[in-house]
Each structure stands twice: as C-alpha cells, then as structure tokens.
Image 1 (cartoon, one colour):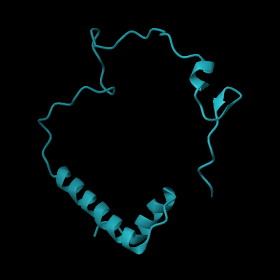
Image 2 (cartoon, one colour):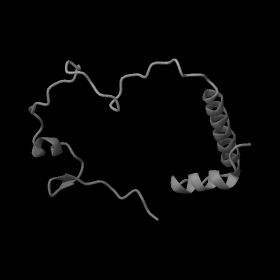
Image 3 (cartoon, helix red, strand yellow):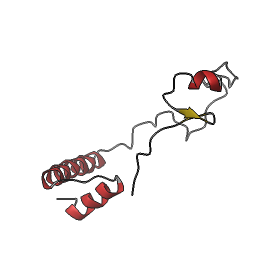
Image 4 (cartoon, one colour):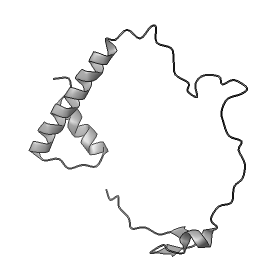
Length: 99
C-alpha cells in the first residue's frame, strides 16, 4: 500500500471531514489505486510527444486570444435583486465553516 491511514486521516482533517472506519478503508483503497495508476503513467515514454499549447509557452503574434474589452454587465442592485439576503451591497450567506 502506498498510502497510510495516518496520511488519509491528515488529508481528511485538512478537508474538515469526519470519516467512519468503513469510509477510511474505502478512501485508503481508492487513493492507493490512484497513486498506483499515476506510477503506471510515469512509466510511459513521452519524449517524442510534442507539448500542447499552454500559458507556459510563448504565443505567436496571431494567437487566437480575444481583445480585452469592457462589456456591459449587471449593476450591483440588479445582481442583488433576487438575493434571499443582502446587505451593504453584498450577498449575505450563513457561516459554513466552524472550527
């Protein structure tokens, strides 16, 4: 097994999850399978594969990027018109993170 129960508990704690013993076993198995699959992918020879276009590479002068133009958008009052609870120009939502 590539991942320990301690590591799974650590990740679960970071995600603020309370796992049962059954969930812990299933998650350990799933994460182990994912890591095993990644190791399999690392064995592939990708030396002759051309890199795909991404932001890390320079784009040519005729790159297909749109111009950055200001567009009409919702004003604050319209955006908040159907909000269940709003105040001071913002959406109000209940607190969901408690530690």
